[in-house]
Image (cartoon, rainbow, N blue to C red):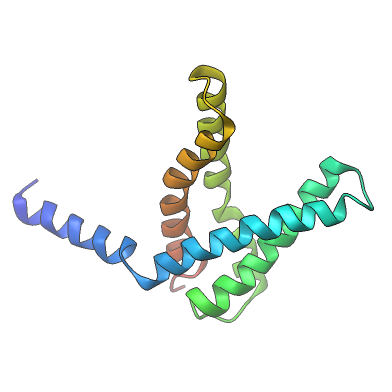
Length: 138
């Protein structure tokens, strides 16, 4: 791999992650986290807490899909995109689970740090998957 190829890879990474779309994606992640916590809390008044957490997660995921469609990727919402949006979060969940498991159980760090590390790793990966798989040209 020559210097030119490495330069092209670096420029592509820069265009992807130093962009308005990625910054908006990160901001939406903050909103989604709030929505997840808020709706899970609201739902726990009318259903069992574990069920409320799942329903709250899917509520936040749905809101996130519509916000991503409209403001980040500027594509009309569609059922097939919604399904791909949900699928695009599977790698993020796996990363979150593994990183928090390792940081809490092996490294004996607080959950907060596991969550921060998982977000730092999973966020960019999820963004790329979403950009290509969910909202990319078909």
